[in-house]
Length: 164
Image (cartoon, rainbow, N blue to C red; front, side, top):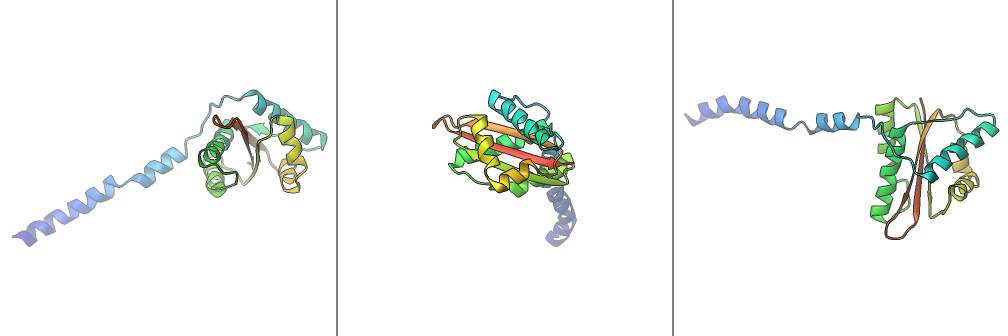
């Protein structure tokens, strides 16, 4: 009797387990949502202008700002602040998100730390061959975030660039 009941309930248990464990589909749905609103601060707006003015002066196309990219950049700034680090950790995940959500073909990233002005962070990027290559790269869109650590007052900069 117990064996018959077990055989009858086993398929139901399997179906219930498969239906209730749908975290992958939930993550995919959330991960594919495009962030359309981002409130730019003065430093971020200045960097947008500096980057596009520089690209134009070099005979390159200007880049269109996408709020979703700025949001992903801001997420990375908060990660660095929360973990007291300065690095490109989880770049691949951010890149994968921009590829999935925005259809990016290529993704680049520049970060900076503890510069007081947009001009000083931008100058540092231009003085670094790898960062300069990103700024001058074959990209079409970008996002920027400058976030101040509330405890230290130091600024974290993340600039992500994509080609669509």
